[in-house]
Image (tube, rainbow, N blue to C red; front, side, top):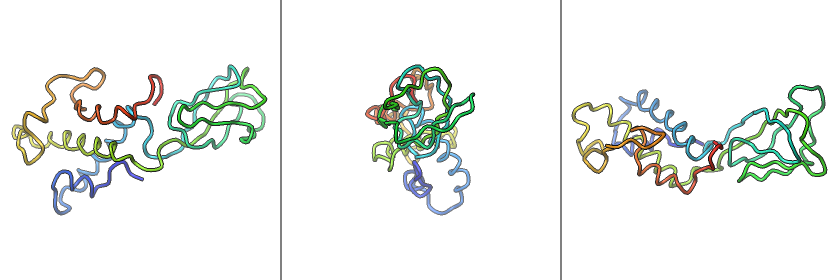
Length: 184
C-alpha cells in the first residue's frame, strides 16, 4: 500500500505521459517520511527497537501498532516471550505483560505498525504536499496557476519545526491523525 501512487501524483499535477515519471517518483517516495513524521506510520511495515523494561508495561515508538512479532531479551540470553501473555493496545502502542513484568532488562521488540489503508484525508494531504514541492521545478514561473501556484498556495511564513516545506493546509489536514509528542 503506497501513501500516494505515481498515477495519483500525475493526476494531481495534470501530467500526461511518462516523460517525468522517474523524477516524479522521487517526489512521491519522499512524501512518506514527511507525512509519517507528523502522523506516524501510514504504510504498514515492521519496526524493531530496544526498550528498557521498568514495569509490567512498555510503550512502542511507532503507532498505530498492528501486531507484535517478537519480544526477546536484548542483552541477556533467553527465550522470546510468549506473545499470548502480552496485550497490545495498538492505538497507544502500550504493551502489557499479563502476570509478569518487563522490569530489569532491555527488550528487543519487533512489531508491525501502520494503517490497513491510507485514509482519504492523509492521501489528500500527500497530494497537496506533492503539488507544493513540485512547484520548485518551475523557478520564477512558480506562481502559475497551472502548477498550483498563486497567492493561495504561497508559504510565506515558516511553520515551526517544518520551515517552508510543508504548508499549513497539509498540517491542518493531518491534525486528526497527529501522534502524541515523543511518538512517531
